[in-house]
Image (cartoon, rainbow, N blue to C red; front, side, top):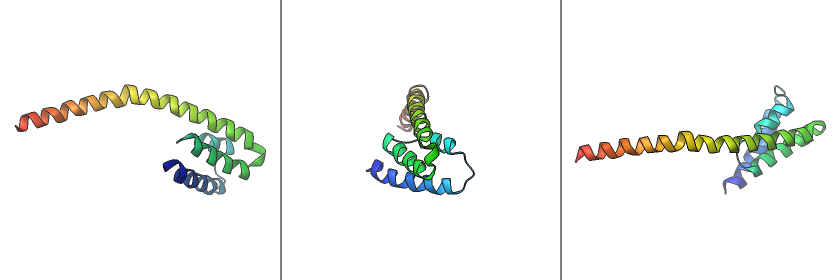
Length: 100
């Protein structure tokens, strides 16, 4: 459900931000890479319609950004998320033991 609603939201958001004319189309293509692949495709497709001369570069940069955020997400989950979860569970278990 999130990919269905998210694609509509991010395509509208991409068109609004593109209408401001303060960002380079390639930078907007890189910004498309956050979220799922369907959301990246929707945002990059919208930007490709707004900037047809840069459509291919926007799609390439969106795909590269999507891949990079996926890879860094694995490392964040492994080296930040798991230790943080472990420490939180130890803290909460210690807190519940001391109450008894």
